[in-house]
Length: 280
Image (cartoon, rainbow, N blue to C red):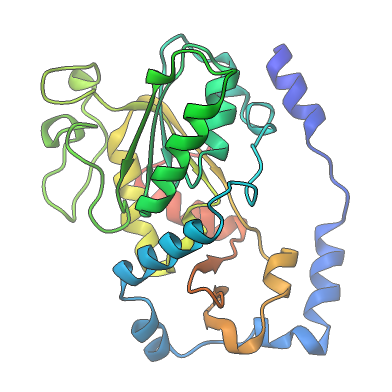
């Protein structure tokens, strides 16, 4: 086992018994509304406006413009040692970069890493540029390439991985990156080595997740990795939601209009495998 893997192994801790926690929560009468089914008609009415979702995140980042709401995710390279051990000049696509708290950790941790970062919120992109630009410890700030993009609806721009390289036959049929086109060319950068989804997928309605993940799969080079971390079922954040904030099965809408979904392992595995990913 490598040093990076040992560090990651020591980082994790199992400080509760999952089955015991599940039984306690599911037997609590005050939390029963989290377990109840939800009308599919209501879900359709609530989940069809991606533009409204982007506006909610714009307003969110405008309210938290100082950047103090999100802390730098310094744990990231410990949780994903592949980032620390990757080859020089590897390319990372951070999806849902927010104000740059993940980008900051990656750029500081690997001096040769090239980071492309997108968000559906233009306000978030502005904040990320400011925070990365002000970080004195980051050398070669030109390694940071932010851009606005709602990957759940439009996919990624063609300069990231063009249609020929990504093997996209149509807007609904998306294949993996063509191995013969996985290096930088005149038409695109040839895809990326890593895609990070750090507390991003949960901000989408469940019905937009499959297509969003397929778009991620289409821009990853052969042998590349999707690095995923997000809210889990019965997280304290979930338990704080009130019945009127529920918008679907394990889906909730905050008072500011932003969304949150809470995953179980089976859901993550089903979504990612359907998009073409293999769990490692």
